[in-house]
Structure formats: structure tokens, C-alpha cells
Image (cartoon, rainbow over all chains, first blue to last red; front, side, top):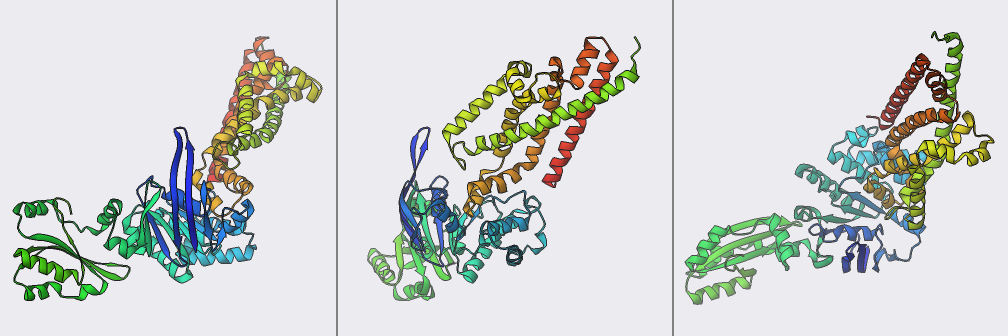
Length: 341
Length: 220
């Protein structure tokens, strides 16, 4: 378990102090995949480096399994890092060492005996599917293979936590997919807690259980991935959700509808069980108003179905209100505003 | 005037060996001083492994002072120091002292630029695995920079060949001495030409060896 308590980080720059993190607090449960998303400069990279104290917070503390990092000596902190693996956007492999040499390095630091190191390296190579590359140098590998080496190296000392700093941002979509699947497997098979820093909402949707949205050094929103995607609260979060959900009416359609002033436009959100309800046909039978479907999408989030429907109700004022009330009892309804939605 | 080659060849060979000895010993000692100096100047800079502003500024300034004195002046200026170290100010051994004083700060700067080429991310990765500053310096920083380091030390070695020839001007022995004493002062042009050719061959050989070694280390 990771507990971040009121962490603030101030950097001294030429133009005066710069606050990269402002009083950040959150908690990551054991075995969870926790995502932190934000635009570049939001402070995510600084935050993840505070988790293994590559950056020392100016104030506040980070607790790993109830052990405060603040109070540890340099030597204890180095031991603590054997229990926290880290992978990077640009892989940061040692060019002067082979694939095996890279994976063996953390084990050498942890003073493992030679035979055990060899055995463990073989095990890890098999796990990430790179047995045939053991003697190769990093510059002979593709991006995806390099990240696999990075992952094997980070897992060498069997850490309980894996920190991922934009681990898929330098990879193409297909390779990203395979790396995310590998991370999922690591999480499932070894129960390793994963903290993912990313600017790609796709990554959050694919593998995270919980997500924190960062902006200007602060966490502006936090919750389960399902809640954040289905009901984003802040403009930043909405922007990120928009980037992968594509749940917006085309502007031209919206303009036309706004101009015609006919009926009311609503967004219906189906979550989990409510996706099974034949709500539109029920409504059509119970009321005489017309219901025009403008947009619809059903996706899966965290194994739960999530539907998003934009409809236009054309009928009398009174009946429209009745329909809205009827819907509100069963699902989440919001009115689509003029211009933007 | 006909050159008496029977007389000159043994001298040329002796002078060549003197040059080789001067360059080898001064390279050895200059590296022993310059390598740690370069490492310290890298790791004590701002934001690095063992940040220490005082050490960094002092060492960097000292390096700059020695780097700004032309070799020919340095050689004369430190004669008292040379006497103190080797007991004489003339001859091959005496030439090694100013050569070391000349080359050590130069090598320090070359080591510095080689080590700074190592990606900060790679150092960070080692830190994230729990490596300490010394483990990172010797286990990551130097191995990662080694191939560049070899190329840069080659540059320093060739610089030393040139400087050792200059040492001839103050009776330092070696090929430079021979070229000046016979080729220049006695107008034996052919002796001068032979020494220059030997120097060219030496520099070519060194550069080729350096390139090859660097490539072997890089394994590409």
C-alpha cells in the first residue's frame, strides 16, 4: 500500500521558486493499478519520483506499507528501492550491457549469488518473451522489446510496487497494447501494485482500476475509472474522457437542432445493469411523444458495460417533463446544452 | 651536403623511443590525475550524484587556469617544480613533468565531456534500483561512457605527441629535439623530413588504434 500525505514539491529555478506539487494526497491499495493522468507539466513525473524518493518532497511524506520514506537513511532508502521497480518512457537501458546484463544489474546491487542471478534472469527473459535476445545489446532491439527488458529489469528483485513513467508513450498503438497486456499479467500473476503515469486516456481505460487527474500540481479529481469516465466533474477530466470516448454530437448536428428549437435534447447514461433495460421502447409505448436518437455508443469499462445515448424528445412541454422524470428514476440523465454539450 | 645515415639512424631510433617513452609515461600519469578530476567535476555539478558547489567551482577554476597557459610557457615556468620532482630540468624524464601538468587538466575536461554524454535517465534508472553514487560512477557512468572516453583519450595522446616534440625546444630529447637540433639548426632537411614522417605514422597509428578500440567497446 502506498500513502501519499500532503506532498508538496518546490523547485528553485532562475525565475524563482516553482511549485510542481501542491499538497497532494492519495492512497493506492495493494494489488491495484492506479493511474495518474495529466497534460505535460502537470507534475505527474515529479509525483511518481516522490514515490521512490528520486525526488525528495519539500514537505509531506510518502509511506510504503506504513514505512515513512522521509525518515529513512540513504542506505535504507536504497534497500527500499529494491522493493519498488520503475520503468521509463525512454526505457533507460544500459547500452554497455547486454539484455541479460541489464536484468542482472539490480540483482547484483542486491548482492544475489551468481547462480541465482543467472536462474532469475532466465526466468524473467521467459516471462517477457525475450529468451532469444539474452546476448543482444539494447540498440539491437525494437521499442517494444526494449520496454520488455525494462520491465524484466524492474521486476528482477521481485518488488511489490511497479512505477511506470509514461511507459507506453514512445510506442506505437499495437506495441502499447502488448505492453499493457504484459503489465496486466504482472498485476494479476504477482499481485504487484502498479502506479501508471500517462497522458493517454486510452491507457487508463485499458488497465487502471482507479485514476487521479492532475492539473497544475494538484489532483483535481480522483475515483474509480468507471466513475471518472461515466461522470467526469472537471473540464480537464471531461477533455481527457472526450479524447477516447467520442461521445459528442457533431457540432453541425447540434447547431441545426439548437436552431430549430424543436424538442429537448438529453444525454442518457447507462451504467452496468441499466444497459439491459429497453427504456426507449418502453417510453414509446407509455407516451405519445416522439423520441429521436441522435447518437449512441456502448463501451466496456472495467468489465462493466457503459452506454451513452443522446436523444431528442419531440412532444408537449408537459409530456416531456413526464418522460424526463420517468427516465431519471432509472438512469442518469443530463440535458445537452446549447452549442457545446 | 650528404647526410651520414649510418650516424643518424641509431639517433633517430633512440629519439623515437624517447618520444614513445615520454608520451606513454606522461599519458599514464596525466590519466591517473585527469580521470578522477574529470569524474569529480561531473558528479559534483548541480543536480548530479554528489552535488558540491565548492568542490566543483574550485576544481573547475584550477583546470581552466592550467588549460589557459600555452605549453611552451608552462614548460619554462614550472622548471623549479620539475627540478623538485625529477632532480633535473633537462632530458626525457624532465619533459614528462610539464607534459603531465599540461595534459592532466586537458584529460579532465575530455573525461568530463564524455561522462556528460551519458543519458541522465540511465543514471536515474540505476538510482531507482537502489544503486549508490559510487556504484553508479564505476558500474554505470564509466562503462556507458567508455567508448567515447577511449576516443577522447586518443585525442589527448595525439596532443601529447605534439607537445612532446615541443619539449625538444628546451632539451627534452625525443624526435622534436632531433628535428630542431639537426633539421632546423644544422639545416639537415632530410633528417627533419624523416622525423616528421615518423611523427605522422605515429599519429595515424594511434588514431586507428583508438578508433578500433572504441568500436570494439561499443560493439557495433
